[in-house]
Structure formats: structure tokens, C-alpha cells
Image (cartoon, rainbow, N blue to C red; front, top):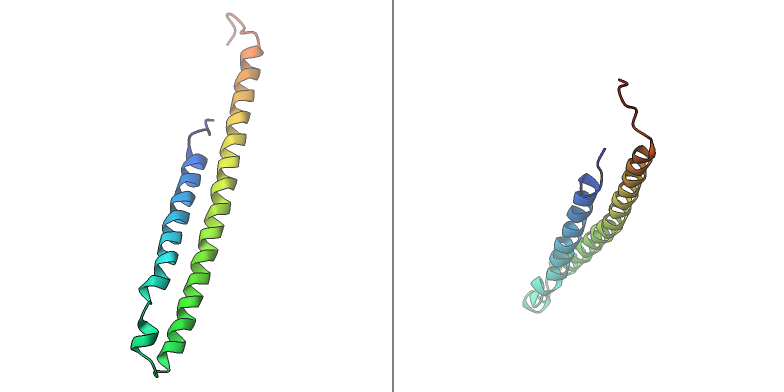
Length: 102
């Protein structure tokens, strides 16, 4: 069984990429709302819009943080599995090969 450089490492990379894109999206929300309050002064919808903005920023921050955790955790599994793979391979190499036996 080969684990190193395989699915665990790939999953870790995907989590890292998702963390990066989520943070980019989250950080773009605020500037996307610049000027809305001034342009819509007096409308009750401005308060609602600010509430929705804050909610999405918090949600995306949560996704970003979870992806950050997963990236490290999955990479740790890949490392542990790779070390296990190396140890198992070494243990088989230490066993003398029987000649002529099936």
C-alpha cells in the first residue's frame, strides 16, 4: 500500500487551495460594499445589508479556518502513512528470502 504522495497529500493540497480562495473571497466582500451606506442613506435595507455582510464574512472565516486545520491534519496523516509504509517495507527487506519455496 502506497500512501505517501497520494490521496492524503492531494486532499491536503485541496484544503489549502480552498482556504486560500475562501480567504480571497471573504476579504473582497468588504471593499465590494464600500460606498453602499452613503449611497443608500436613509434606507432601512442598509442595516440589513450590513448584517448579511457580517454573517457571510463570519461564515467564510469559519470555512477558511476549517480548511487551514484540515490541510495540516491531512498532511500529518500523509506523513504518518508514509513513515508506516517505509517501516513495513524495511521489515520485509529484513526477512531473508527463502529460495525454492512457494
